[in-house]
Length: 148
View 1 (cartoon, rainbow, N blue to C red):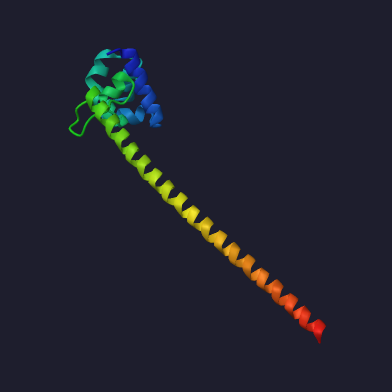
View 2: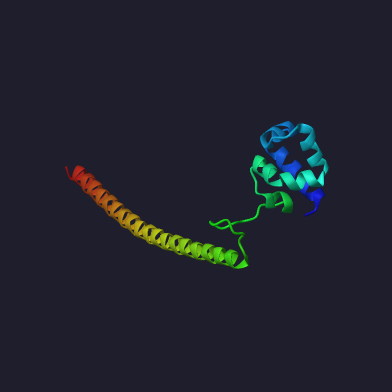
């Protein structure tokens, strides 16, 4: 454990949480001066209080030491490469299932659009036919006016 990086991680997390040195010191039950010495790199104080500091900052000790959050499984064990591989495969499988669902929905909607286009074409034909009938009736009406 590199004390400089640990103390920088502690300071960074404290600032992210918008806590003062006094806030953290009170939470872990020590004076602000003692806590300030931890942030300055007091090795013994840091080692003895790392767990309390992590808890006060709402993170695991590993995050303060490593500088990043460590994934753990449901039993609190650090995830290994195989668990990440399984998570990736599960995610990929889930994505494939979602993609198939989406493709099926797209296919269904395309079919519906084609059906609606056919319906519109039939309606347009019907309108054209009725317009022709109207035109023929008007001509017949005009012819009857002329013959009278």
